[in-house]
Length: 115
Image (cartoon, rainbow, N blue to C red; front, side, top):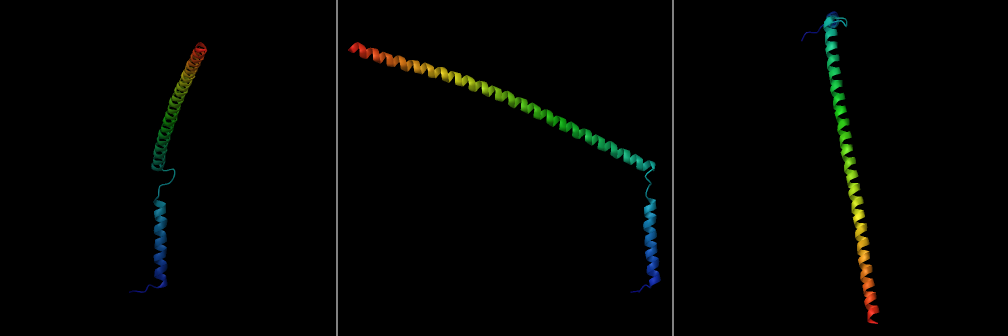
């Protein structure tokens, strides 16, 4: 194993730093046409994604509105059926009460006739 002296370590460190700086300078600048083209492509993809998200949200809202309308119609139908059933029950109760009264009156009349 070879021991490196201080000068060699400094030289290796300096060359590593120069390599990093060279790599940094190789990157395209912000005003490069390729960079602006990629940026525009990303913006187009992002805009298309936003449109799709907005469409899905609009569909979801429309579906929720349709479901709410159907539930409202079902509730109105159920309320109408309950009112109709209540009216039928009331009429049936009144008819039964009249029948009971007629039967009571008939019994009373039969009792009077026996006397």
